[in-house]
Image (cartoon, rainbow, N blue to C red; front, side, top):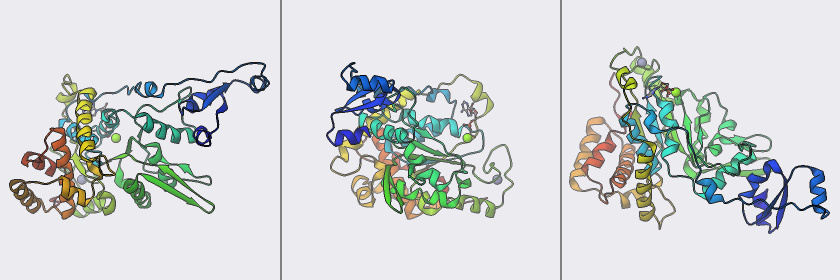
Length: 386
Ligand SMILES: Nc1ncnc2c1ncn2[C@@H]1O[C@H](COP(=O)(O)OP(=O)(O)O)[C@@H](O)[C@H]1O
Ligand SMILES: [Mg+2]
Ligand SMILES: [Zn+2]
């Protein structure tokens, strides 16, 4: 409402004190907090003066505090590396591993390595929380990147939004942050289907008989799943009891079009006890975030004449243009496609990821090492051997 009032050219708005901070960050419009109606009446009668609140939005945004760190996670260096790549290039990611391997713990930390919200982003996200009445008490802005983890029993309306007066769903609450779908194959098929629109366009449009509402929904998707129904496929210690058909059926629950939007697959093995009890030597959130910020700057520079700003958003034409590789890399790719039975779809994913890997390395050219690493991140495209 405050944003609308500003856009209509109004000068000020009176609000209950509890909501004033939220509106105050809009700027260019005076927000007068009032504790009681009589206070408001007195002020309007000129008997008492209420002064408008002052908030420096940029300062608020820089206060983001996550209360968790990558160094909390022991081992899993390979998974941390893929999360770094996902954060750098804006890639969606799927984690495959047995229960208790640390998938949830790792996913939660992804939002901490994405560069801080800009003031504009913070305002967009706060708008959604404000509409839902979910702003933390006394705070004017959402300052941390959201992390949303809806349960797999969620309805399609709960996920993308809906209701009589259409309310934003989880995809919009995750705007500018991370949407984590744990046990992804357990979500109802129609629920996963509705994710396609926001994943393609970064917005959701909810239509009702007499109105259409659009909410922002631009997020990094992190999915998690067991490798098979019993959870122990390819586990070095426990035996998998699933048949080839059961595994195929389980994996096929995530539909092709959705899988198409997931660039990175990563195996998350359970961590051996000795690694869990040892002193973590892991990298911290701030180390990783520095590299992510540098890689994002490179992308912004390269893509500044396009409408996109991360590698993950490249279409096939842009991939052709920005992901050129030499003869050697080309033959490496060809060999891998052949050996692992990778599809043409996998190819464009590999090129995108290797672009991000090269950017993280500060390299203009995509070289063989970058391609070789990217090939590892397509494990679900490989032929299934039981
Ligand atoms: N690599 C790890 N380092 C430290 N703690 C871990 C690690 N992996 C798992 N844990 C511990 O095990 C718990 C369960 O992990 P969780 O992330 O819920 O696993 P998953 O989501 O794969 O089932 C975590 O809360 C954490 O305490
Ligand atoms: Mg979990
Ligand atoms: Zn199994």
